[in-house]
Length: 171
Image 1 (cartoon, rainbow, N blue to C red):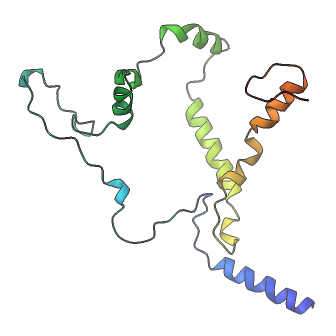
Image 2: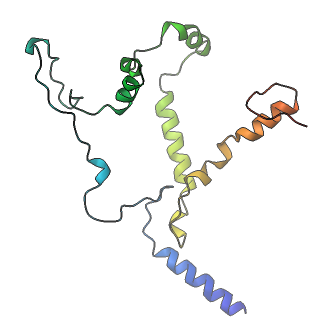
């Protein structure tokens, strides 16, 4: 019995050693060598401008007037302003919130610092992914301890008498 168990474990380890994972948490791969059909985006129809002098200056590598803008198009169809989607900095309505949030100071290097820490975290979590016999997506399992379960949070607040309108009351 122990010999059979050892043979099975040895076989699994041998198969895991043959995997060619790259040490990441995500395992996605394309199924063929052909073009990716979702990378092909049709452009809008070309239009004759009314005034060539009113055309914006060309932006090499930037956006083009015939590029698809699906979010902006959806907002326009629903009656909104597509320009509201553009980043225009902190609005005056949010100025007090930003001031309060930055009252203890702002670290200008916070994004690179967090990116480096997250990269190290993912590297540690993916360390033994190459030893698995099957390539499984480990992303959600790695971040499981950092995720928030909204039902548990709502139960916590409801049990303490805080009204939570999106959650059924306790009976």
